[in-house]
Length: 331
Image (cartoon, rainbow, N blue to C red; front, side, top):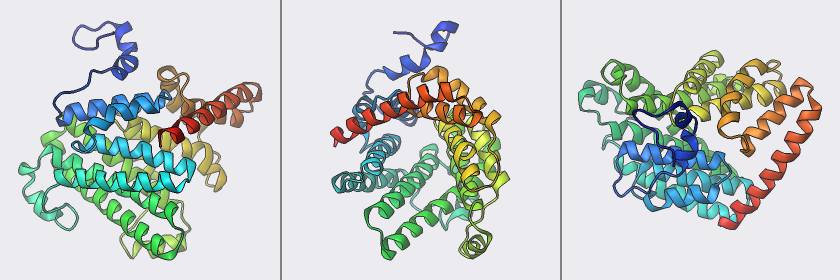
């Protein structure tokens, strides 16, 4: 097994992703190890190894906020792919448990509604509490998604909307805390991971809200929402260029915007140069990953490279079908 550490060769550095996929099972869990193992699980998912990712996360998902987030994310993905009631119920039960896990690490007086108190006591902020807020916000978004999928009625819509607003408020408060504590903790890896989560959330919310019609956006501003497209894109670009757990999630959000959303909604022609630059490093890390192949096919289509596109798209669709079957069997 390749080893990455002090004195690692360039060849070993290139093998980092595969080596990290085979990280030994942890016998003790702290924040740093939890982020490492969740990164490993993400690598496995991007390499089409869903079952292995679940096996890695399962032993700690009730005790670690990051394991809980990763484990529930895979099951939520399963539910949204199959739309089977059994999968939706399993994912909903898992995400509720994940929220309880994250809640145990949050500050007793949550950031929501207590930001001024937290800022005044910023020296007492614990790293785990900061990360717990981000993980809790992401779990809330997943639960809101399942709420919409589970039952399409007005009550579910209202419940999902409340969860989304709570998540948005947590992200805004985390951004303020990040700005206040940046000089004190900006050099630590833990803070950079926290910063990556904030940029993903704030960037995605601003971009998503900016795409709404102005009349709807003006109404949403009355309940605290706001959307600035350029600011959202800048946050996602900064997040994508960082070396954090959520870097690739920022990159995938930008890829989706540049290759689909901007074209479908008529907000622009899509920045294919940026899309190719974002995708290029992950094509080397995950050459057979279905998500990466899917976006390679999409860019080839928009470039008019149909010969290459046909091969990529057939292969990526085949992989997605196989993955869908595998994920269904996991239920």
